[in-house]
Amino acid sequence: MSKQSELQRTSANWNVETCMVHSGTMRSPFGETSEALYLTQGFVYDSSEAAEARFSGDDNGYIYSRYANPTVTMFEQRMCALEGAEAALATTSGMAAVTSAMLCQLQVGDHVVAAHALFGSCRYVIETLLPRFGVSYTFVDGKDLGAWKAAMRPETSVLFLESPTNPTLEVVDIAAVAALAKENNARLVVDNVFATPIWQKPLELGADIVVYSATKHIDGQGRCLGGVVLSSQDWIDEYLFDFYRHTGPGISPFNAWVLLKGLETLPLRVGQQSRNAKQIADAIAGQSSISRLIYPGREDHPQADIVKKQMGAGSTMVAFEFEGGKQQAFAFQNALEIVKISNNLGDAKSLITHPATTTHKNLTDENREMLGISEGLVRLSIGLENADDLINDILMAIETVSR
Image (cartoon, rainbow, N blue to C red):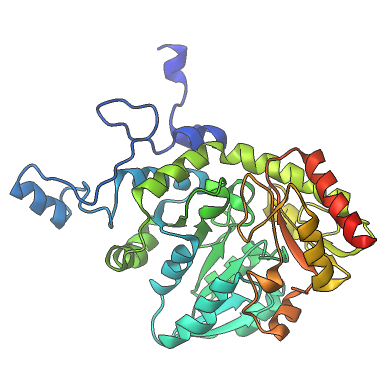
């Protein structure tokens, strides 16, 4: 037996960088290097009997791209390899992933417990959409395990959180909340966008379902929308697949192909962006006009102990607050040259937004205050530019508004 044949050559033994280049690839008879893009709605059968077998489930081939598509399958399988999940279904956007993951498993009379600190559209799903279908909810301080315990009811079936949170970068103890869910026969859904699957693995921490806006780091270059739901094969089969098949949140093959290309460089991009973010957070610390700095990779983060326990490194995100409120925050953003104003994140370009007037503007003043989203808070998504250039840009803008 040759030395090469003794080596284990399955994707289960590959490191993440190799998986993101090769996992899930299915080549056509042409032997293309890059994954094939199958822009088709439907598929042709060799015979009537073949069509019958396909629809009866005796043949596992493709039927219709709303259900499944070869390019989409490659993206889903590569995400499974990255996340350590048994199964996944890709969606048109991150919010399609969140909504599908929630609605597919809830029914009239169910109760949801969710962390207060959520993206505005996620809060809409919890507090506006679900009650229309007879599902009640309770918001809790995600950092307080006692609050999670107190909110549980016999009819509680789903717990939902994001960590780190948008935009204040709070970190929730996923393993502790997951254990609580299991004790109460409920399922935990985790939005893992800010940590990325490079730095945090919610399924390994006990979560049941993980959702992503693939629009963010997974694409990472401002090109397209996408989302994905990952879980066990049993949960996908029992709850999500029929919902997905009949309600139509499936991603387009073209977007799935773009996201496949994004995954090839995801470990490189997230690694460099996180290193840049740490340098920038350290450079901002101590600036007299900054009243609060939040970065999960620093020792002064309020949940630094949990960060060390469940994240491989800090985030690509930095949040900080100006003492001068909205006027100073706006002036700072307008003074930046390299960093661009945009509500997106996870891009190769550094982006900044003012959450109180953009992503979280629809919250009440009381809710924004409770969540720590002040008029002076800005959320910075760090890109791939040279860290020294970014630091100079940011410090010069701070100096401009501090005079």
